[in-house]
Length: 322
Image 1 (cartoon, one colour):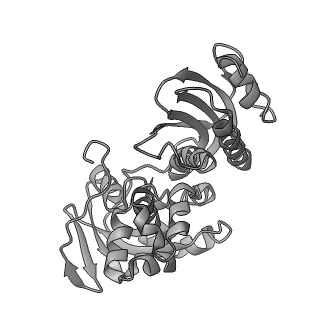
Image 2 (cartoon, rainbow, N blue to C red; image 1 turned 180 degrees about the vertical axis):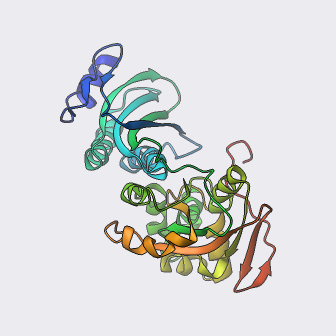
């Protein structure tokens, strides 16, 4: 393989069918796209850096899944339907043994969600990945962070805490001997974007966010934007049997569920009058959904266990506080 353009031709060009709304994709200075009428375009950009979001030695197929799934999760949180992605790849040298499984995994996930790669860039430097995804959401219906109101119920999808435990296994090989460690490592990289859930919540939920920096942090973003507080019953937090086996302690599992980043599940609020609609609205989505608390008047995020106050000092992930 010789040069940037050979790399693009071999690994990124002609890998997918052309969407009808893509007029021109790879090969020109810009892509040309034509969105449907009466939709807003949801756009999200994320960067993953080797040594920060993944180890350079990590399975490249898992890295590809994580990179794209984390971006799709942002679209899911807005209730958007994925459409297009641009991808900028920086790597020290072209590495076919790394690129082959990476691209196979990347395009498998993209095709599953109907996303077409429409452009990007490749350059030499420390290994990093930057993706910009775009999707469609009906006008004036996007789920946002500022819609929660006092009395709304707080829900989360899936099970929480596994990603944090998986990261521990990645960073400390000695932990690989603990129960379920290998499964948790995979869980850190392989998430399921809740696109169908987000779409089904349009008109049902009042606010939503994806859990990328930890539930306690991401729910806090909803509370701040909506000028409200919240009460969470930690006994209701959904944690997996895998995490319980790994930690062998229920309290630790609850703390992991609150602080674990890169889960890419959804946290959303639902008005009381819509609470009964949640189960039927999400019945076809294949996702576990759990009500964990309620929105309260403006103030702090209060934790309790079946009514007994808890004063844990927890925080989510912050890239500049590590």
